[in-house]
Length: 180
Image (cartoon, rainbow, N blue to C red; front, side, top):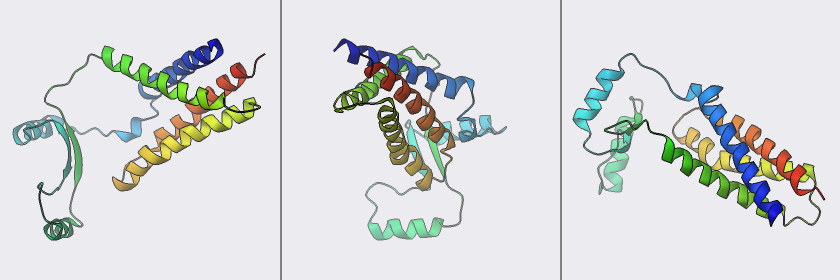
């Protein structure tokens, strides 16, 4: 049990530190967000026209729209501009609780990986790295990559994260869990 706890905590720290480096220091995700000099005017228009916080797909269809009307509205929008907008009335720059929640999620993710690795009859460093990379690539393919297909976005930073962070975690876990 001690071995599993240490593997989990250190693995979660590796994951958490890589996420910080990836997003805050290395610019891995920089290409996902664009800047516009018109941001103040855009935010003012959004603030005047959106009553609720949330993520909007524009143009969208009102709730309760029939399938036929929805199809007609989407056909009419073909070839015209569209956007996804995540709107919040107030920017919260306090990151304390977000960091706590992120680390707790990292702990759960690594615990699940370590739990699976410990089920192997004869775990090797290589099988730990391969399994860890499989975790990362599955997570990438089913969320960020799939979203980039449907919403025509850039997911390059996420595949870099999947390979680097899960590769490092696999190396750590494989080394630690195969020690006698």
